[in-house]
Length: 111
Image 1 (tube, rainbow, N blue to C red):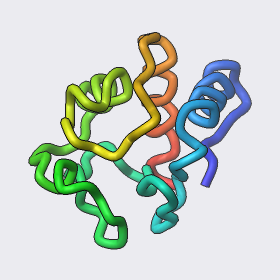
Image 2: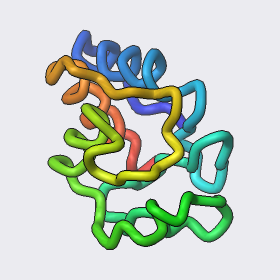
Image 3: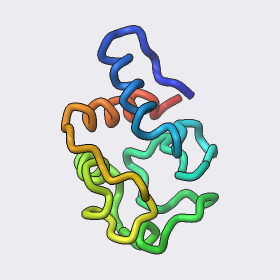
Image 4: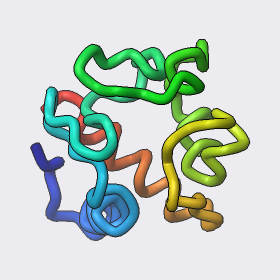
């Protein structure tokens, strides 16, 4: 489900998510695609959705997603979870774009 929009910040956050993530991910609970659903990802154990075929590396990552871990993962997935299946996504260098994506994930978490 979509997050509330209406402010320039909310619109920019949704656009950042759509441009970088939406090809493979949704925010709808249970709607796994090429990538797992990102619904309520903050606070979730990495590699833990029961209906998604994660890489062994992601299943064994042993951490819970928080803002910092997401920021580092979006910047360079391989440096956070070596052996993940996020190819061809190589990361987003721009911290402002990563911050908007994380804000969008947070705003959509309860929907």
